[in-house]
Length: 417
Image (tube, rainbow, N blue to C red; front, top):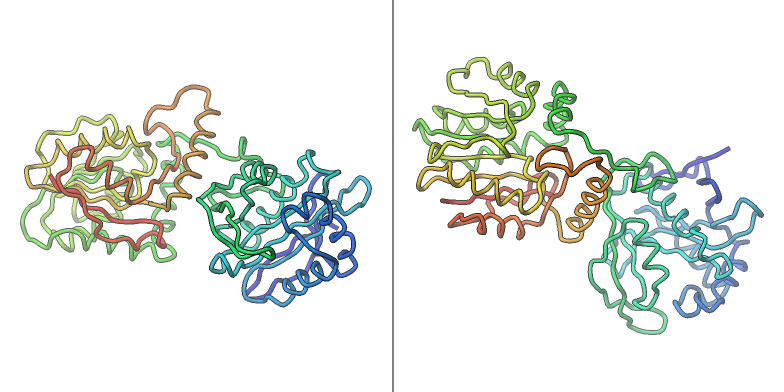
């Protein structure tokens, strides 16, 4: 029957040995496939892009896959169900020239090109890698003149991240470098980006998850991130006035009070369910807490009222213009000499472009234009972009306090008035 391949420990376990789509079967390449694969490679596109020289070259590829036990590696024959013919091959494995990144390679016989087979096979492999193997990122390189492969990678969601000079059989050549991050759960081998992403209203999203929010955020090392955030506050017995926007259930409050025990904290969140849990979780601190059920996008910030404003894992739901507008409101609410602390999801430039494209797909499929903060959609930026947005909003100083939160995909910034 239909089967999946999966990664367990340091070995690829062939418990079941194929992946099926509506038109294709992908199964591991075997030695008897080498002649067919080599023949396909001898077509003009294969020769032009240096796929395989001969049958021995294909066998060496299969053997290299079989001998790798440290990282996900597999070479698949792409078989058309309608006639059982091998029409190409697709594989993944660590690329030494890319510092061990897992690279996707593929080719389709010329007579079968133009039918979407490479995209269909690519989606199946990505699903397997992300959902069954547990991989978080996948790379690929393409000859700069190979427009067909570039289009396939674009359909698969890869983002171009510049060029790489790489050694190949015919010498050192320039390649375009692509990368794809695992951002969403893929339901099966034939996922579709246009229908994959779902936009949920912000308040409904968090009300639905209020009861499980703390467990989710504190799991897998998340508790350490809150301690790191709290450690960025000054240690003082003064009665500081702090504004916490997008506060959720207030997980960070105890870490703040450890440093500023007499702080009075105004907590703003759009989710009533979250705010109710915040009060429940801090029964002895109610005189120091003011809760406000509102969107911090449209809330009327009081002028020069707070010594410190803080936000944690919330600003990545907004685009550049929306962030600048929020930052200016924060700036106006700070007392002279006050500062803003932001802990948030931040990514590299390639991931930022992938999230931006994802955001555009989601918002384009909405029935009407989304208002800032209306929907829960991630659109994280790089640290440098975040710093520049804070400066553009009018903050005098911006510094990175930590860049080691959220498993390396996050940072804590401090911006001074």
